[in-house]
Amino acid sequence: MDDLVETSWFRGDEACSFDASWSPAINVFRTPSELHVCLDLAGVDPTTIEIAVADGRVSIRGERRCPQPASASGREARIETMEIDYGPFHRVIEVGLRMKVTGMRRVYDHGLLHVVLPLIRQPGVEIKPTDPPASE
Image (cartoon, rainbow, N blue to C red; front, side, top):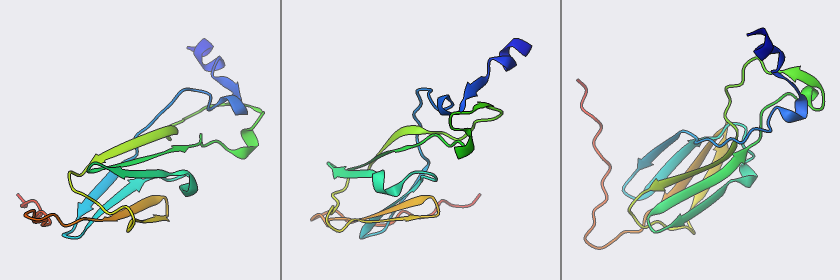
C-alpha cells in the first residue's frame, strides 16, 4: 500500500493528463411555447459551449478544463482527492418537436447554462405541459 501512495506524486501540469470525458446533469422543461434546458456547467467557459438544433434534437458540447490550483502548475504535488469531472462533454436531448434556432436564448448564471428555444407550432399537434406527478 505504501508503494501505491508513493507513486501518486506528479508534477502539477501532469495532474490532468488522463483521458476523461463526462456528462453534465440536465433539467429539461417544456411550456406550450418554449423548451427550457438547464445544464450544470460550473467551471466551463461559456464562450466555448457549442449548441446545435436539428431534427428535434438539441446538442450541447464543450469542455471543462482540469480544475487544479494555479500554484501546482509545474510543481510536484500529490492528488489527495479528485472528484470534479473534467474533459470534453456532449449531451443530446431528444425533443421530438420542431424548434426555432433564431429565437434561441442562452444565459450562463452561477455555473448553470440556461437555453430557451421557442417551439414551432405544428398543425394538429397540441403542446401541453405535463401534469406534475401525483404525490403518494
